[in-house]
Image (cartoon, rainbow, N blue to C red):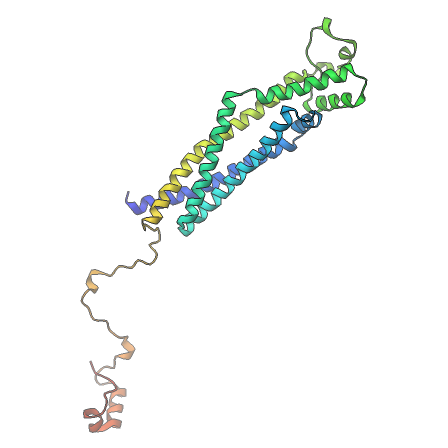
Length: 283
């Protein structure tokens, strides 16, 4: 494969990768919006006390996801535009966006490995706090918050030995609600599913950023070395054209015996042909 073919293949791959990165940014933005405005996370955020670890983590996850989605979208648009227009500055901007996203995803992956249950522990601590306060206080607000959590996660109470259940806790799940799962299991199952989706997007994002950075760096060096796909402004002469005199168009070259030339000779006469300026030259 020649150098020009490699450049064409790299440009096609860059356009496909930019489209894939654009979709990845859309998925990240959707996941961030669901994590912040979704019913499961919103109900936990409403019942969390001010200054709790979950509230800070909830806001940090939303802003981090939106920022990553913005950089992914910007990098995809810059790299695609730079590929079409062969602009080195735009390609460098796309590479910078991809590098920033890669560094952020590395930090997210490292945090997930070091603290795999931090989000789960924060949510369960919030539920335990609401559950204990709802059962041990006469306030109806906490009881409504507990009911809202149970309705959202489709669960009821916590699994405890029957001998340790109080009167209020024993009467919490009656009838059809007694057959549902306890809220600790429901919350853990939902958070693990959400965590698996986030880990998958992180892994796909890391691989995509490495590939996009390799392609953008190769195309940047290609643009600066002058290897254009369309070879704009480059023209080559044929070997047979060297040493040939340029010829005027055929309709400006009168042939011998032309009626127009004979008519001009009759008008000018002998003096015009010998001493006057020669208007036309017979080749």
